[in-house]
Length: 117
Image (cartoon, rainbow, N blue to C red; front, side):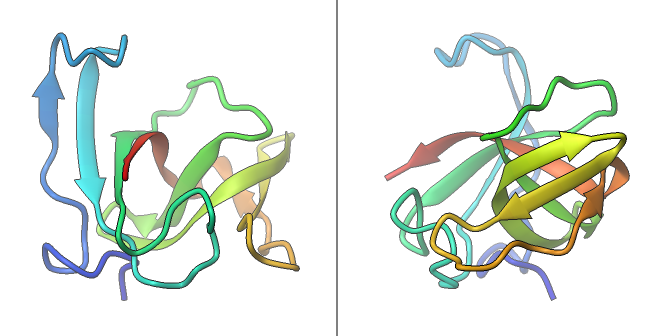
């Protein structure tokens, strides 16, 4: 089961933005997350999360928000990086008391680049 409640439980198809005003050129997707409340107050079910497809070698750091899952169509969480080293990424929802199980870099599907409130 995907984390997105509309567009068939997956983000909308990628769209290419050349001069999007975000200062970044590339392929973006957007989706409305389920109401898990795990990332409140940053975003919730009424917001649109804008993401770029993750590619190995992209620079990630503590504090970045990523979407992980077995495939781009099967996202299981969108949470903030709390630690990253040796190919292992630790995440936690901002509104959660507990950390997620660690992920590998290969589990990262998207990097959040914006939120539409």
